[in-house]
Length: 359
Image (cartoon, rainbow, N blue to C red):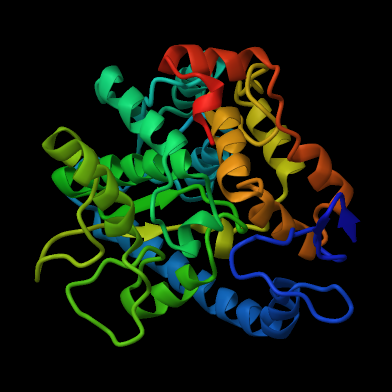
């Protein structure tokens, strides 16, 4: 399939230029070929992990930790993390702390959803608010300069999402450590985080690799890589909002980080939205098709397309195509970047950034 001058996988729509992509003679990309080869193996692993994750959750419930919470959830007010709160509360009856990072670009409707959903579910919520001037500088840096991130990061998200998610992860994890909360949940969808998270669990009983040991086949230290570039530029001002490394001190308490959409849940966006609508969640009208909480997302998508030549959500969406949950036509619609939308200009104005600076 050819769109303009750029070749695309005829099965999933992944474009030429996407990190690590190759095509065979039939025009099928290596990601589709790997998916077919390893799907049965991955399903077997997921079934095993499902049992072990359920046991881990039940063990925490049985142990009755002295602190107030069984788990902390990185909560954005978006559809996936809202459903995650609902699922953990209704399915397991966990004592949950919802943690929100206010990045200065959270939709007003998303904030209403945060308040409504946590109230209706009877869940405590805390919000971390880094200084807005600092956030603006960090985001402008990510939008206008090429950060030397490896393909493992850039295949999943734009640079601005990477520096922001680094703060989400860091501040949520630090809250969990401070409050001795044994479990941490993140609402990554199946296509947002690579299958290595499943292998990580086999090693350290956590989908995010956090260990005081070194293995010869360890994953890249994504936590350190994302944070280091920001720390090098902004120094101690950002230190408290990032976690230093996946390698921790011996005996240090860290929660088990779980990504339940991989193993516990069969991801279905329509059912998710129908369910959370019943507890008061409302889809924002001022975000783009790929976000239900963040206003800077459109600008991040635009910058990624300009800098790297592809839409940052294309990897996630193509994964959904392989699973039969979307079509290539759906991808075309979802990855349209609305450069004339009010949200796009709002983000530029709030950052004091000229569109021509994004190259």
